[in-house]
Length: 239
Image (cartoon, rainbow, N blue to C red; front, side):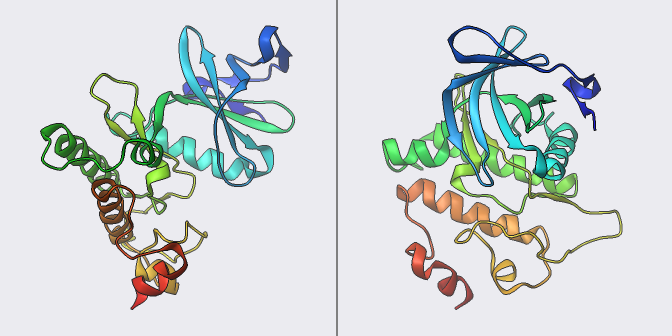
């Protein structure tokens, strides 16, 4: 099955290894020695290049093509907003899909772990968090429910102002015009789920509002969670 490349162009070029561990997949150069992070289901994020642009390359197992296709579709729909991670292209070889995405500095989780709490008295901190909330509101106006907001899925951009970016929309859901809620469905991250997600009830955009509140608390408390330690968190959410 052909996979769409940069904003709609099909690509069929096979991988080609060049110097220093770089692999060329279609138009994307993947620096396999530059591992930026890991995700679920064998996902790995590498540094890379697309044309003259440095990018993050998210490598996904081909068996999860439906997740990658959904993420690309929703990013194309929403990434005009400055707080949504920018999508550039998708390529594939026999075993993997490669998403070329905006390159960021680190995740919000890594930033808080390295530097501690962000001071809400600082205007720049308040501005970044307001921008983040604005990005979520934009998704909701587009009828997109993220469903998996957490500090690891919020990235710190390489822009001089360090804008926060909402990323990782593989589990997101776009509501139909006549829909206002949906079944809980795919398993999202334990500890960041709203009560209705934990209990298996029907969900609305409120699940993202709950998670955003937890993310903001985490950011301003220096890595603490509003509902306690991991082992008791979901019990506390339901209490």
